[in-house]
Every structure is written in structure tokens, then in C-alpha cells.
Image (cartoon, helix red, strand yellow):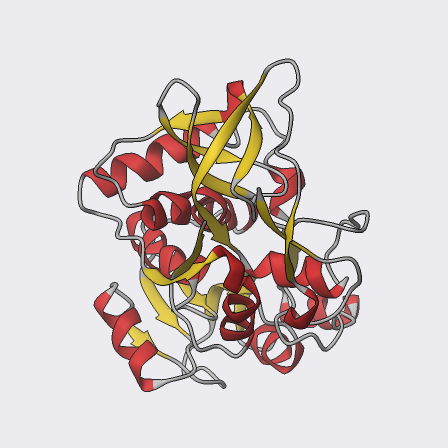
Length: 302
């Protein structure tokens, strides 16, 4: 079968198509024939070695797929080594999905949808009427966080984006305004996947008892030291969030996914689908993602 592998850390150039034997499902696992594999920003950190969890080399990235079981069921699944034509998944962890639901839409609700849900519910603990700023608001997580913040009762939802086209997108998704720093009014919650200078600006823009939730380092500038005295003067907090350990908690997957799918079915949540790439072009997908040329959910098609 065809898979995408890297055997050293670096940029997208280290990704290469390889032929390997299909995986063998173990006890409690099922073999899936992949229809589409999701691309996440975390995958780029795995490839360059900056991911929070280390992976042994050589490594096939990819944490989510839509695929078919041997008995023909179409399912959404969390996996390891998803950039491949076939993968194994825990039978208990696959979710059957309807034929009419697009693969990219379904995949958007897995890692990125769960991230957006937990950022607002578990990490920020958003309260009704609070203001929310979403960085990278046109991306896979950001575009869902904008909509979920409104759904969860935010008073104002403000978006940070990088281009006029992305401004139009996030306003269509329900953002009240597109912002630049300094903010005209302090914010209760800021969701930051960028880090660097943007993190520093956001921290100074928090209202009293505000929460800055950091869940990525797209700027790749290294993590910013935070002075406890500064937090005291701001009367604010910084909350770190990493999805992988969060999903190990009881009820962290099934309940939120059920809510996300119900919101999509009701027409109240619209996953933004971005580019679709052949599996062999995973390198180009990563290049486009890192260059901020994309919006919404990217997928690889075997």
C-alpha cells in the first residue's frame, strides 16, 4: 500500500511516498480502507520535531481518517499513521457516519472540532456574555471556534486573520468584527494557536479575570516566558491546552462529538472545507498550510 513517511525531522520536504505492507489489526481493532485522511497543523510539528510528544522514526503522520470497514461501514476514526491507503483503528473508537456527509466535513469535526469544543468548554470555561477573540480564525480550529463561541453564549466574537478573503469568511461565519491589536476593549477569552508577538499582545489585552488559552506555536518562535507578577498585575491567567491528553478523560470524545454532529445536522455549525490533495502530495498540503494559503479543513485522498 502507499503511505507518506518521514525518517528525519525537517520541513515538508522530508515527507515522501513509500510502499509498505498493509497493517495487521490486533485484538479489538479493525482494518480501514481510507477514503480521506485529515491534515492538522499538529502534523507539521510532528514532521519538524517540535511536537509536544516525541514519535519514533521513521514515522507515518496522520491522526484521523474517514474509511470503510471490511463489512462496508463508512466510519470516522481516530488513528495513528493515517497518511496511508489502509490503517487500523480501535473498533470501540470508530463512529459510523452517513453516506451523504462529506469526508472533509466529518474530519473537521474530529480533531479540530474537538479542539475547538474543549478550548471553549474545558480550557477557557466560557461563560454566557463573555467576549472571545479567536486567532487564526479562518483555519480549521478557528473557523469552528468562532461558530461555537456564538453557540455557547459569547457576547461578542472577534476574529484575527491575515487576508481580506479570510476576513470575509469569518464575518460570514458569525464573527462580530475582525480585530488587530491593541484591542479597543479588553477581552474575556483569547484563543491563541500562534504564539510569539501575538501571544504577548493578547496577554496585555485581557480583561480582569480574563483567560488566554494557548494551544499552539504556529509562529515557531519558542514559547514566551510568562512572569507571574505580570499575571498578577493584569489579574488574568494563561491556560495551556493539548488535545491528546485531554481526550483521555472520560466522556471527552463521545459527548462532544455527538453535540458537534447534532449542531451540523441542525444547520447551526458549518465546517469549512479547504483543499483536497492526492495522498502522494502531502508535502504540498503541508507547504500550503504553513504558508497560510489555506482555510478550513485540508484532506488527503488516497
